[in-house]
Amino acid sequence: MTTDTLSLYIHFPWCVKKCPYCDFNSHELKSELDENTYTKVLIKDLENDLAIHNPNKPIGTIFMGGGTPSLFSGTAMGQLLRQLGERLDFAPDIEVTMEVNPGAVEHDRFETYLQAGINRLSFGAQSFNDSQLKALGRIHKSRNISGAVTAARRAGYQNFNIDLMYGLPGQSVNEALNDCQQAIDLSPPHLSLYQLTIEPNTLFDKYPPILPPGETSEQIQNRLICLTQENEYLRYEVSAYSKPGYQSQHNLNYWEFGDYLGIGAGAHSKLNIDGVIKRIWKQKHPANYMKSLRNSVDVANSKVVPTSELLFEFAMNALRLTNGFHLSSATKATGLSRADILTGLDNAINQNWVHYDPINDRIKCTTFGYRFLDEILVNLLPD
Image (cartoon, rainbow, N blue to C red; front, side, top):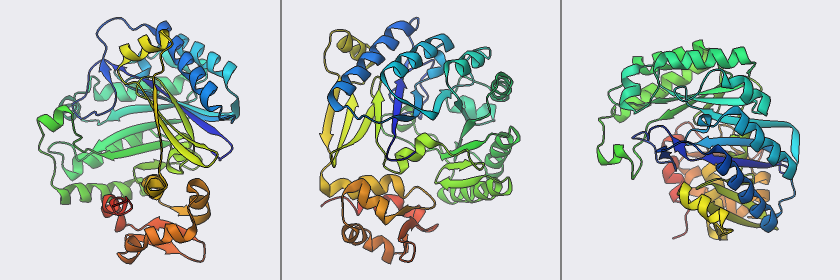
């Protein structure tokens, strides 16, 4: 991704079952899925955005998230991408990713997804332990993961990610390593390894499970980093590991503070418009979102990010990258001066949480500093 391209996020808000840890805008599907209606309102949503903001950049990446986008058929996805292509300029090497729940997709759909133009998949595996999958509220079994990956490869997919979680209820170090090894055995070009956290307004928040103590989770993370390195996965972001050439371009755009449009119920956008950074978010509830768009009612809210919050917004993303960021990219993305950025991070540098390399003019989090990322960011917020 470059500053000359734009990303597009498309939110699909329905799932078969709401997971107890999930704080995303997802809703259990209570009736038959109306693919046609939702596709139409997505296009209407995009047309409204283009009329107002007119970003006038080619689309470098598309990410279909949820919820469970794989509840939608390949035919519906093909129709959607064709209509998007009529209204947007797709880059020749566009990356189009769809999240896949291994328990909510028919394996013969992979061919139609690929034909539709979806060239990257992200499998929400979370664990290869059936007891853990049950505790996490997942609807799939471990065998469904390998079955889905095998079917996707047979259909022609070469680029895909496997999502795993660690620090699960009662999980030992060896159990976490076994999960990761089983994922590695499937040879995914990309791995995402997330520590389970209890988010507000989730079922786990109301009924908290007993998670491993902090020292165990830290030991798990350290061992996972070693295991991925041994298998030639490059850790390029706190939770992201890839084989050479398979970094997630869409997520890199987020982490590098690039611009993106978001369509769909509850989707978010971030745009730099003539040096002013604006965040936009859409109406969350699917039924209200669709009704509003059908009745030509605006579904978007927006705010301009004040200058006092720009360094926080930038660092919240860029400090997650293991290589950090070049100061020139920070000044270009935020409009702040080099002096403002260095002054803002002065305390974190003194604490050895952040390292400044004056020769290469780069800033990055130290290995020690990743433990204090929240503290670093809080210090960047205005009083």
